[in-house]
Length: 313
Image (tube, rainbow, N blue to C red; front, side, top):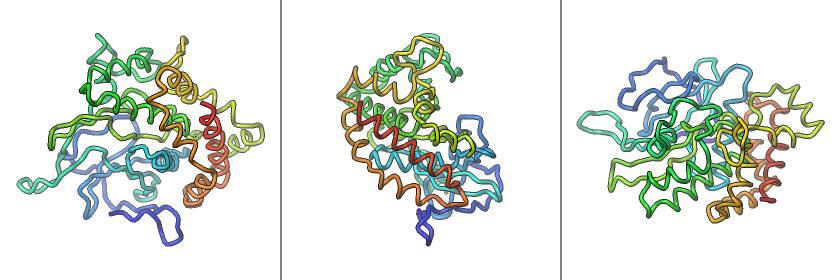
């Protein structure tokens, strides 16, 4: 088991000493998306981990880590994320959300479940759904997701799945996640036991918390107020929007909660219990070599704003 903290109390930043590409056929196909990444099976681990390179000049690595930790504060199932380096390249290790077991006959780790991504779920409900389009996909809407999941999962699991999906949206509102497109949420079907199906844990939180900004811009937004920046951020799911762009993550929660309060209530209560002290403790655990002081200040102000906004939903 990877140790989460180093001897100073900061999150560990692990050095990955492998040379990609690895022979990882048993771990499944190449993960979706365009960013550089590769699978690795760490010594003593059964679950494979995905190493994702952070693009130069971005905060993708710390945003991915903070997204996972904030999901934990919400008690929302999410992929475990650890800071890591491959040679001199910063990135993150993301634990597979698909269960794996060691096959003794094959003497290798194999998957014990499969993901059914959102585009596949929607294509099973909407004729001629465009599985490849990610941005500005008007059929990737809250209303369509609600109905597609009603068809895709057993009736006995539907309320649980929709409640958990509402949790994804509350997390997105909290961290300003702009990348919950139809390949960044999924159902998980287990191959062990009764082959049950449910919503997969949340994953891929790198496009959040202003990770694309440079420190000069963060400092300017801190001086002028970051509310406008947060409220103008575009998500990837259409709600009430009638334009060409999906709803802002906060606005989507405000709107969707009005339609289905029973799915959102518990998540909003949990968000209200997150304190500024917990936010400060979380940010204090980020190594200074990974996250600048200005980025830390910006994230604190960002989360204080979204937590306050969620209290009013």
